[in-house]
Structures are given as structure tokens and as C-alpha cells.
Length: 111
Length: 119
Image (cartoon, rainbow over all chains, first blue to last red; front, side):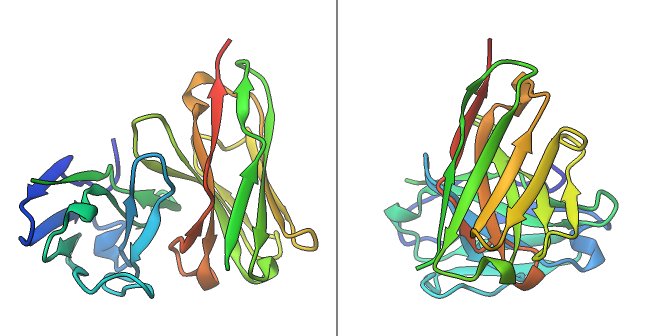
């Protein structure tokens, strides 16, 4: 069971906007630690998508955005494209565990 | 171009040991803290170990503490993970990942290497 909770799956049609939630607690996201997001295609390594809550590394389309509020964070993908079909993971730090922690992952299906 | 290339994975018997290596290129390894992260088949990501830029500070997840040892050789541009007393629960793809400036996230990942613990 992951410290950060994500929905197992989300879906949307091409062109739509979808959001993926990441719920933590007062010892991680709620404590002010940044949230980061990764995209992972089957059989490949994760790729950094969003860092420090809402920053995009160079090369990541601005269709991807992140936000954080209280003990939760969200990844939004607008203008959904078939190539966005992938697994997405949130990540933060937990001070009671002294560990970097991940969400369980969300599989995005583009209908 | 930043590259992290792993080696050393494979099949090992329960109770056995294995050493993973991660060769860094395209950047100065000594300037970055590094991590090992694993992913069991069909499961999510699990952070397992951190090492500071000079190797003086290391952290481990409880699941591997006392069994795994992270180390680095900056002169050789390499990161290592010595894994001992392996069990079936350690079966996973293992990734090394770079942490830019101790920022707490992972900006570059290796291709991953599969470790299978089975008799």
C-alpha cells in the first residue's frame, strides 16, 4: 500500500482534459514537501514530467501541468493525445519515514 | 548527453548476493547525489537508497536496510548497489537515478536491470 494514493486508472477522449490526483498526509505533501510527477511507458524507465509541484523540465509540452493544495496534488493533461497513454506516478518526501515516497501509479487510457 | 547505464542484474538464488553497477556519462557524477529505485513486476515504483555527492551520507528504505549497501566511485564515474540476503520480494527492475542538487526528485534514470530471485 503506497503512502501517496492515486486512482488506479483514468481515461479520456482525444482533445479532452484529464486530471490525476495524488493524496498524501501531513507528514509528506501536507508538510510542504514538493510533489513531482513521472511518466512511464511499458518496458521503459520513468521520465520526469513535473518537478517542484508545477515546473516542467525542458521538452515537456505545456499540455502537462501540476498543482498542489493542502495534502493533495494533481497532474492535469489538456488536449489529450493518443501518445499520452501511459502510467503516471507522483512522488514526494515523507519526514516520518525519512523516505522518498511514490504513489501507486495511474494508468491513463486514451479512448 | 546524460546517460546512466546499468549492469549486473540477473538470476540469483534466495539468500544470494548480487552487485549492480551504474555508469554515468555526460555529466560530472561527483556533483550529484544518486539513488536506487526499484519496480517489482507489474507494481509501482519504490525508492530504496540514496547516497550523497561524496558518499558520506547514505539512506535506505526499511525494506532493504541492513541487507543492501550503496556506494560510489566518482573517479570512475560509477554508482553501485551491493545486495545481500536476497529474497523473492527483491525481484524487480532496478533503476539508478540522479537527483539534481539534492532537490528530492529524479531527473535522469537508467534503463533498468532485472533482478530475479528464484531457485
